[in-house]
Structure formats: structure tokens, C-alpha cells
Length: 187
Image (cartoon, rainbow, N blue to C red):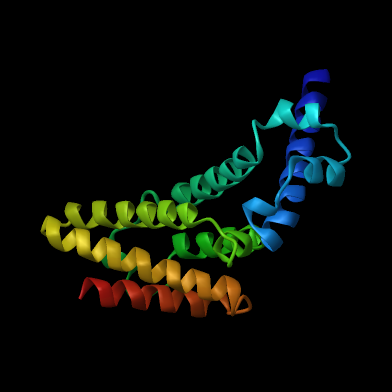
């Protein structure tokens, strides 16, 4: 029981640190985040912060890794591309739900103070997932490369627009746009 309480406390402190980080990051970018500001906002000492994170970059890296890990868990194994046409897939709806649940982070990471490496890593994951499916279906490698890159770039552009400009778009409508992108890229 004591171990469980310690784990819950550790989880709470980690979340508090991440939320304090987010507060400054979304307004000022990584250069505007300070360890002392995080500690003050959380009500913890610097030594407590360093028990959890090496520095402010480790906080950002941890959040990005968690978000991208969740996305890869959802999309790492795409359903057959042919089955994906003309309907909103469960994967797409799960991605949308994940983004909505983490909207504050996505706004910060995709906004003007965001991390370009997050975008790069996300695009690489989308590209890798689609490219693998295309190659399995016998698409020539050069075509799979271009289709993967185009879809990843277009999809990230769509997500960025939705997160920053049109967050209230209905899920099914967004899925139709996502399906439309995929259909256009594959044609």
C-alpha cells in the first residue's frame, strides 16, 4: 500500500511539474521557461524538481515522447489501406480523441513557440506507418516514399489547422477530411 501511495505521489508531482512547464512554454517558448518558475508554480524545491527531471528540456522531451508514443500506439499498425477508404476509421477517431484530451499540449507544441523537432518526429512516424503499409501492398518504394511524405505533411498541416484555428470541428467531419487526404495521396 505504501508503494502505491509513493507511486501516486510521484505521478502527481510529475504532472504538476509538466503543467507548470506548459504554462510558461505556451506563452514564451522553451527560452521563457525557468526551473525556478516551475518550482515556484508547483510549490516544490529545486532539489525536488531535479529528482524528477534533469532540466527543462527533459520535461519537454518526456511530454513529447509520451504524446508520440500514444499516437504510435494508435497508428503504428494501420488497418489495410483499402479498408480505410470512404469511412472514418477507429484509428482516426482514436487519434482525434487523443489530441482533444491533450489539446493544451498540442496547442503549445504546434503553436508559434512550439518545437519543430516534435513536428519532425510526428511526421516521420506517420510516414513510416503509411510507407510500411504501401510497401506491403506492393507499391514501388519510390512511390511509397513520396506518398508517405506527402500524406504526413498534409495530415500534420490539417491537425495544426484544427488545433490552432478550428478545434470545434466535429470528429466525423475531420475523419472525412483525413480520409480525403489519404485517397488523394494514394491516387
